Image (cartoon, rainbow, N blue to C red):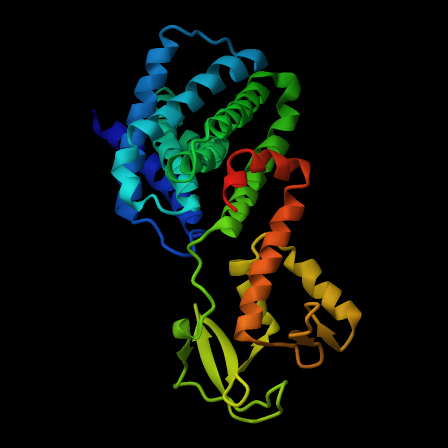
Length: 356
C-alpha cells in the first residue's frame, strides 16, 4: 500500500468516524468505548467487504434500479448483517443496551464504506474531493441503510429469538440501499435523490428516539442520584407550601429546586424540557409546551393533579415520586400512540413488540 492510499484511508475513516461519534452522542446513559467502536468498525468493514466481494463473484449487477435493489442492496446489507453475527463475541459482554445495536451496525457500515471509498478514490482524478462527497452521502447513507438491522439484532440476541424482525429489518435496509443507488443510476430519477437521502437520515434518528424510549438504562429519578449544589445559592418560595427553604439540586446536569419542608420539586421550563428528552423522547415537546400555555396560568398536567405547571412563574411543581410515575406512564402512552401509525407499526415488528 503506497502513501497516497494510506492518506486516503486515514482521511476517509476520520471523517466517517466523526459521524459515528455523533451517533454515539445520542447514547446518553452508558457510552460505548471509542477504541472498541474503532476496532469493531475496522474488523466489521473487512469482514463485510470480503463477504460482498465473494458474493459479487457470482452476482453481476447492472446499473439500474432493479439490480440496485435486488442485487447490490441485497448483497451489501446481507454482508453487514453477517458481519454483525460473525463478530458478535467481541462486543457480547458490553452489548447491554438497545441503542448498542444501532451503534455497532453503524460501525460496521462505516468500515465497509471507508474501504469502498478508497477503491473509488484511487481511480478518481480528484480523490480528496470525491472522499468529501462520498462522506456526505455514501458513508452517511450506508449507516442510515443499516440501522434497522441493529435494532432487530439486539432483540434477537438479548430478548427473544427475532427471526421475523431480522428478516423485516434486512428487507428495509435492502430497499433503502437499493433505492439510494437506483436513483443515482437512473438520470431521470436523480431529482428524487436528495429527498430520499434526507428521509433516510430522518428515519435513522426517529428510530434512535424510539430505542431510547424503550431503554432500561435510564438513571431513575431517585433522591440518591441528586446532588445538592452547595456552590450555588438561590432563595425561592415553594409553589406548594410557600416556604422559603428550597435547595438547589442537580440531576444529570439538570438543575432543580427541592423544598426542604414538603419535599416538592420546583423545575424550570428549561430544566423540564431536558427531563422530557430523557424520559419521554418520543414526545413532541414544542406542542406539549404550547398546549400548556393555551390552557391557563396554573395547569394540572396529570389527572391526579399532582404535577402542576405555573405559567406565570414558568415552573413545574411535583413530588419526586409523582413525577417519576408520570414519566413512566406517559412514556408508555407515547409509544402506544406511535405504534398505531404506519411507521410505528413497521418499527414495532422489528422487535419493539418484545420490549414491554
